[in-house]
Image 1 (tube, one colour):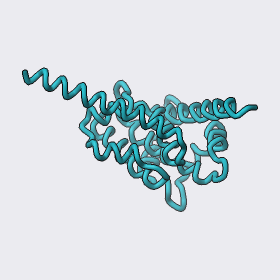
Image 2 (cartoon, helix red, strand yellow; image 1 turned 135 degrees about the vertical axis):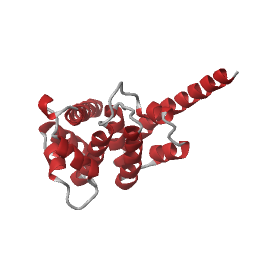
Image 3 (cartoon, helix red, strand yellow; image 1 turned 180 degrees about the vertical axis):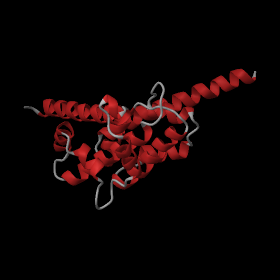
Image 4 (tube, rainbow, N blue to C red; image 1 turned 90 degrees about the vertical axis):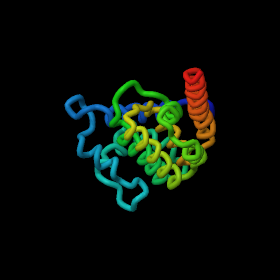
Length: 194
């Protein structure tokens, strides 16, 4: 298999794993989703801690997630698992909001998330920085009752936490949404004032 085909397969496997995680963490137990107590544990956990909680391991060892981690972990499986842990925590946190999901950039802008904080989110690289900034953004959206498109944000988190070049491309798209929404809101406010 050539490199391009391998990248496409890798992306497809990672997307499938993230889609499944989003579904599990945003649906109730009686619908086949993850139990509420386990989701609460995921929201409270530290994915960078020495011992990861059982609820996280139940998700990390699902076959589709294991396969995706295998594609991400060229050298360091533990780092890839912890990057997935950050994404899972953010999905559990932000998945509490209901309504029509918005892209993360649009959601943050529409709720008045400070530009400086937003830029820190886009510039964050590595497990620690991404974990902190992504949790802040997800919590902000949840507190403001705004539902976000979790698949795209979770992929960005993985890419940024692992320092992959794709994070820059994803971040560019997120920034476009944030600033386009800010511009539209400013124009709307100016029109209302006149």
